View 1 (spheres, rainbow, N blue to C red):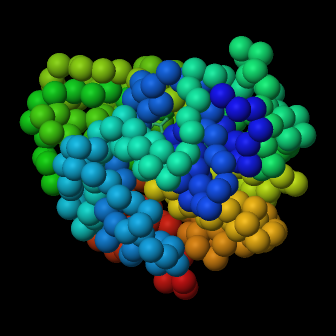
View 2 (view 1 turned 180 degrees about the vertical axis):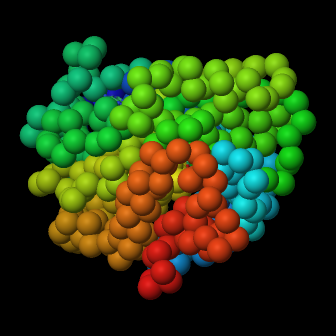
Amino acid sequence: MKKDWDVIVIGGGPAGSTVARYASQGDISVLVIDGKKEIGEPLQCGELIPTVDELKRLCPDVPDMEDLFQTPDNAISLITTKLKIVPPSGKGLVFPFEGIMLNRPEHDKELIKLAKSKGVTYLTESYISKVEDNKIFTRKGDVFSAKVIIGCGGTNDPVRKGFWTEKSLNIPVKFMLINGNYDNSTVELHFGSCAPGGYAWVFPKKNGANIGLGIQKKFSKGKSLKKYAEKFYSKYEGDVIYEGSGSLPMSGSVKTFTKGNKLISGDAAGMVLPSNGAGISTSMIGGRIAGEVIAEHLLFGTDLTEYNIRWEKQMGKIMRNSKRSLKMGNLLFRSPDFLVNLAFNRLTKNLIWRAVTCRARFGII
Ligand SMILES: Cc1cc2nc3c(=O)[nH]c(=O)nc-3n(C[C@H](O)[C@H](O)[C@H](O)COP(=O)(O)OP(=O)(O)OC[C@H]3O[C@@H](n4cnc5c(N)ncnc54)[C@H](O)[C@@H]3O)c2cc1C
């Protein structure tokens, strides 16, 4: 394998594969390096993304969604039409919401195929231990260099760790796949003492569900995530097929995604919407902007900081609203369950929906 590249992307998840796909234009050479043997495995996800039509409503300033999101049938478990927000009382508020329940490993593999079809090269089983100037060092002792290096390695990305000082609140998350009969039309988010400072989810899949939860330790009164998970899981019957865990960055996007020839995208850049934990679609939105700007930089000399400007135009308002909603949620979710129950009613329904979907609180967008 050659050692000198135009672009090196660290991490081949949704952000990295999308950056690579859009950066690979003309004769630009793009290498994606990932520590895993099989990118996308093991599963670490609730597997829910909005449909393209729903995303157009949620993120109206993001152009040409059809080109970005080309989820093929084999990556889709089922399509849902409703979202239910459930307070401790169990009396949920139901909203229309078109969601795609993914087969996430397939989804990530399809993104790799798309990138490869544009000429991107992948190097797997190569964990990057250090990034210096324009050089990348793998644990195996290989050294690669590139004109532009972008970190898409998630919460522990080496570019983020090495060149950014901002700290992120990463919340621990556990989930399981279970078989059985679940309402195929509805995804559920549960709030209150079942998941202090976070939420629990019940997302239906073909022949079962993906069920999980995340908590903020500062609100959990010394109880472990495992204990919360056991209690929440015990409400659901069926054979557990798989159990997993991970962590979600919940501080929102960092101030700048660019430092010289180093960029970051996806979870590494805090692109998860903190009020609802959605990170797949936002990583791809950010990844496309980064990839396009990198290509323009190499072909026409566009400044790499254009990446920050385009993100701000497409996602800035949504990210700010989402951060604000999480702060509001933190106030509410440290309250006793009876107050949470009171706060979820017909009068607040619209407000809650606006908070979860990152719109301005009082319709000021
Ligand atoms: C339990 C859980 C449930 C979630 N549920 C949802 C959901 O339902 N819907 C949703 O939209 N989002 C969900 N998310 C968030 C979503 O999974 C992430 O936002 C998304 O995967 C971010 O994509 P990414 O490409 O930035 O990072 P990742 O998908 O984490 O990919 C990073 C890649 O980088 C590689 N890598 C990391 N470090 C290195 C290194 N040093 N060297 C080489 N390679 C490296 C990794 O192997 C990996 O392949 C969930 C997250 C968790 C943990």
